[in-house]
Length: 140
Image (cartoon, rainbow, N blue to C red; front, side, top):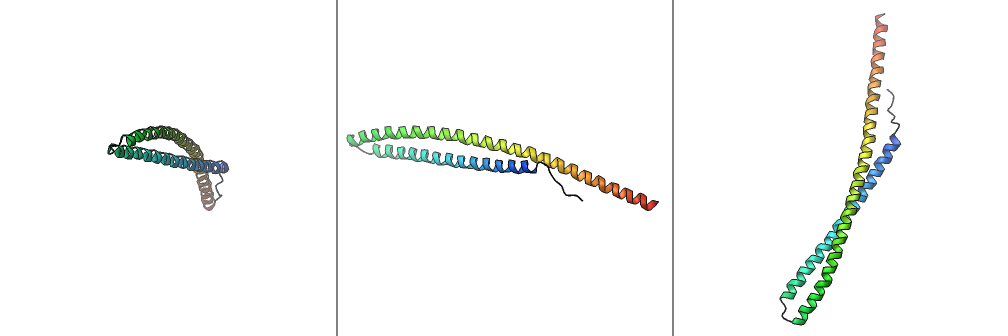
């Protein structure tokens, strides 16, 4: 039996490599998203702690400082929210790129599977022809 040779094997290998790279890039973007969300959560927790501390204070000077600090903290939180939104956008773009690369790989895989099925069918046809020829030779 002859061995199966897929003529687009190099293309398939390239597509698999590109898909793997796209998946790794998406994973890296996802990690950055989680990291920026953690920073946001820490800032929000810090804000809650400052508010709680400030409410327990009777000193007007401390409360005034707390309000100034809260204003600065709110600005940082707003900037971090923008960072999270931007990272969510980048992560989604990376995911879409990975899905597209995956589709392209799947197309070549389907072509390979069809070519292999045709190859097997042809080999079986050749084998059956040889068996038929052997039968006819034996009968003569």
